[in-house]
Length: 217
Image (tube, rainbow, N blue to C red; front, side, top):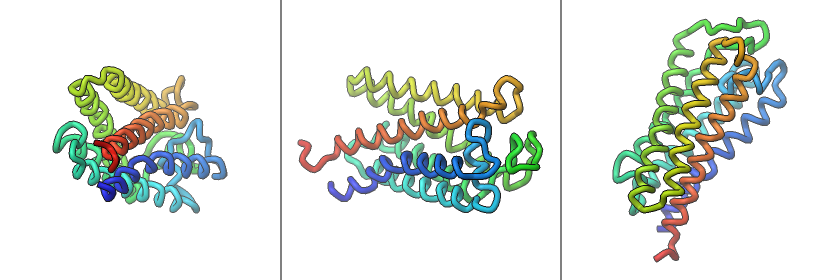
C-alpha cells in the first residue's frame, strides 16, 4: 500500500508545481502579459524551453497519478474511466509540451493578434483540447462516484468544478479569438480555468491518499 502513495502524491503535487512554474515565468518574461496571453505562449521565444519542460514534468506526474489510481483498491469512477481520463489529461499536457502553440494576442512581441495556424500549433491545440475534455469528464465521473458513496457535498463540489472549468475555458477561448470585450483578459480567464482544473485534481489526489493510507482500516 505504501508504494501506492507515491504515484498518488504525484497527482497532488503536479498542479501546484505547474502553477508555480508558469507564474514565475510569466512574471519575468519581457513583453508577456499574464492577464492577456495564454500559458502556452510561454513556450515561445528564447526561454520557451522552461515552459516546455513544465508541460512535460506536469504530464509525467499526472500519468504516474493515473497509474496509481488504476492500482488503487477503489479507483475513482470504477476500474476504468477515472484513471483513463486522468491519463488522457496527462498525455494532453505532454503533447502540449512537445508541440508549441502558435503566437496569439501579440506575443511574442511583433507577432499578430490573430492566430495564424501551423501544423505544430494545430497539434498543440488538439492535445490541449483532448486533455481539457478528459479532465472535465473526470470531474463528473467523480461526481457520480461521490454520489454513490453518499457524499453529496463532495459530489456537488466536483460537479461545480466541472461546470466552472467549462465556462472559464469557453470565455478564454473567446478572448483568444480576439473578442473585443474579453481579449485583454484572456490570460486571466485561462489561468482561472487551469487553476480550477488542477486544483480539483490536487483535491482528488489528496482524497485518494487519505483513502489508501496504510493505517486506514
